[in-house]
Each structure stands twice: as structure tokens, then as C-alpha cells.
Length: 449
Image 1 (cartoon, rainbow, N blue to C red):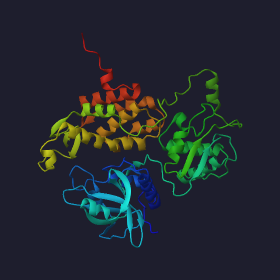
Image 2: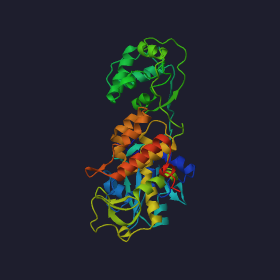
Image 3: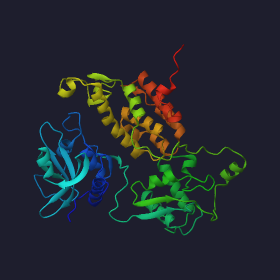
Image 4: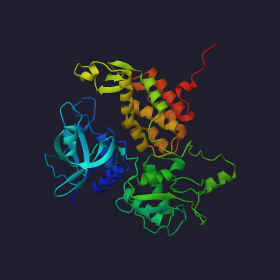
């Protein structure tokens, strides 16, 4: 079996084929009408990051084909894992993942086959949809956004690493050996791989934590803190962002612990208030924006059935749908220049909000309630995944500083070099939603009698 080179993708061709075959076996409807999204997910990305090459308002299969660095035009013998492409003038086109490539037949896993993901022959798309086959491209998502929130496919067994007894003073631990090897690779710690969580290992962990900009107790060099009975989970996830391990957490047990920070033990005995722990309101991780979250975004964006320039000077329509960067210039697609209905605007809003939800899911590494997820989706929808990724807000949240989020949100109120009252109100509402779980219409004062 031949495989495509996947140097710039997160998962291998075998894993991509396994993933889309699983979706087909489940008769998944999640990827209806989102063929490029399915291909990006198959290769481990939350979103493709493909540029809108033809500037028509949609990121589609033809955009990927036009921007691909390695195209094989007209070749009908693509290898497993390749991305096959079909287009037709005036149509969005289609893209699918090759899952079988034999001497006489090629099969693809495609979405939207009777509204589900299914495995069909290569010629199915041409015969059924009337699209023109363009060829195949080697998978390449250099601008891919975030990590895939779906579980990684398992074409081969992965190693289980049990982070048990992973605390200072533990000896002969396979988990500590894995940790030490990773520290040697990331911060050049030059640790001897002994399996003992000694002072040298703690110093290396602290060095890594400081490299993330963490300070104080967040840079104490501990994976499991026996005083707090917690800690280190975020450090572990940061150390192993592309892990091939299933990480399981267990109680560190009753083995003797040495060299514990005496100052913090004394402070605890003296009755000093403990450091506030993260306060997730639920352990379930929301994946999608709720209906209330979509309503909140829509109310702040406001609806316009006609093209307008947003406060930053970009051509926009509906509930804040970006048509193109820069002001209205008369070259907008006809379907927008004629105006849209509120129903069309709501559909665009749901489509536009999906990448924001995927970005929040992939970038935030701590538990969130649905209300907290919606607040961050509103922020990301408004300002973009890039700003979330680079923000101090994300860094502090992933460090467990939930209480810092409203403060960090309040810093993002400028556009065009000036503070906008509308952004002040929006950031305040997002902060209230994150902190108290209340949507704007739930916190408005009752009308005077």
C-alpha cells in the first residue's frame, strides 16, 4: 500500500484513512456540507486554515486546490491518504480522502453521500454530482488551526502512561522516566533517566514552567503537589501537546515524600488561606456553541441585510459576516450585493461561529462550563482565533486562573486605535457570562412599573 508524505500534517496518512473510515462506519452526519473540514479533521486539525483564494466569501475545495503546493493534475491513481478534488464553475466543488487505492479501483471517504459520510468509488462524485475531477493533492495544512478535538484514530496500539506517584521523592517510576526524557528534549535538562523525581528533575520542571511565563506556585517544579493534593496537570499537557500516550491520573499513594517545600507546609498548618484552585463548573468539555451563545453573538453583532463597513473598516453583512477585508468597493459577490434575509444571516452566523468554537476547544486545556465556552466563543468570533491564541487571557486560563478571565477580556475594547463603547459592553457581558453564567438578557434590570 502506498502512502502520501505528510510532513506538514499532524496525523499520518494511515491515521487519516482510519479516521474517515470510522466516520463512514458511524454514518456520521457531523460533516454534512463540510468536505474541507472533514479532510482537515482527518489530518488532525480543528480547522483547515485554508486561505480564501478567490475571495468569494467561502473557503472551499477549489481554494485548497488552488493553494496546494503539490498537485497531481488529472491523475486518477491517487495513493491512500491523498486529497482528491472536483470543481465546476459557479459551484463550491468537493474534496475527499482516499482510503483505498488498488490496481483497478480507488475508493474515497466523502461527506454528503445521502447526508452521511460514506466510502464510494472515485467516479461517484462525477457521475452523481456532475463535477469535474481535477486530480489529487498531497495533504498539507500549513495554516491549520488547533488540535482536533476528536479522539485520535488508533491504527496501532498506543502506550498507556499512568501518572501515578508522580511527585517529588518518588523512585523507580516509568512515568518519571517518560517525563525526564521529555524534559531533556524540551529544555535540554541533561537529566539522567533514573525514574526518580529528585531535586534535579524538579529544577528542570520549574525551568520549563518559567519558559511558559509562569511564576510563583505555578513554577514550583511539581507535577503532583502533595501539599495541595493537586497541580501539574496543565504542565503535563503542555509538555506533551502531541503525545502518543494516553495519560491517566491516579492518586500518588502513600510513599514517603522528601524535600517538600517547608514554607508552604508551615503556612498550611498556620491556617493561611490556600491558593484558590481552578473552579470549573463542570468536568464535561463543551464542543459547540449553544443556542443561547449564538443569540448573544447575534445581539451584539446586530443584523444588517445590506453591505456595510464594520468599525475596523471591513466589508461586512448580516450578523457580522466578513465579506472581505477593506471597505466596500463594488466588487462584492452578487449574492451579497443584492442583500440577504435574516434567515440567511443566521445561517451565516452559525457557519462563521463554528471555527471559533473549534479554536476554543483546541486551545483551552482546562475544563469549561457551557457558559464559559460561549463567552470565549463570542470573544473569538469577534476578534479571531489568532488573537485568542496569542492572548494573555489564554495563557492565564490554561494556568488555571479562571478569575483572571473577565479582567483580560476587558482589555480588548479598541478598534482602529480607539476605544469603542460597543466593545466595552460586549467584553463586560462576556466577563459576566464567564464568571456568573448569566447571559445579557438574564441580567438586565426589570422594567420600571
